[in-house]
Image (cartoon, rainbow, N blue to C red):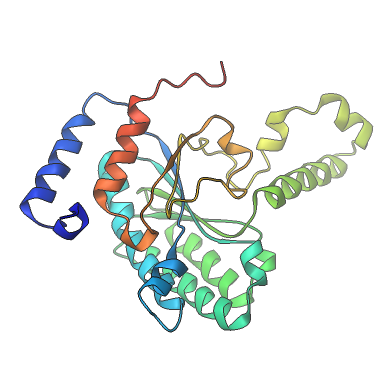
Length: 259
């Protein structure tokens, strides 16, 4: 019998305790990025008429996942909910997904939640209601001290870098500098200061669910030295044991930062 069928049973709980013991003494990532993949396939394989059911099940998993991260000592989590490419999906699929995302923003910023929510992405590309929901979540949680949660919606790694460079050039122009003068002193830190995640640590660990082994443009700049963990489970089926195994894999690696 597969372990998945035993979730909640004594064998599963014993395995979970063993994983927790194996994490003792291992380094825990400060920032975890997650590509929440597989919601649509999860729904289709279960014969759901609308893939939005998969998106809703994926959304239901988020709070549980954040609790796991907080308990493990993770400080920052980036959740990729919607890419810029996803914005070109048919309206009958995109609209329900945006509705789910707006509800996620509302749930994360509820008064009884400890999370500090930070929108990450090109909000100007989103419908007004979605952009407003994300901004309101950020405003409602600005004083909280819990886990820092980046909600990546309308996000694309190339778009982020282009936006960062544009912002940097506009700032320097306002200060009276020419492009030539900017070019003479430009370095990577100048661009990093204008990313959506400016001021935050880069992700130590990036997790992608559903078995796909690519980043698809997720945190392109920030993930230069990240460790990657690819999990076969679809996001709605992602369990605490999957998360603990990702932490164990990260902790057992010797990070050499390109050397």
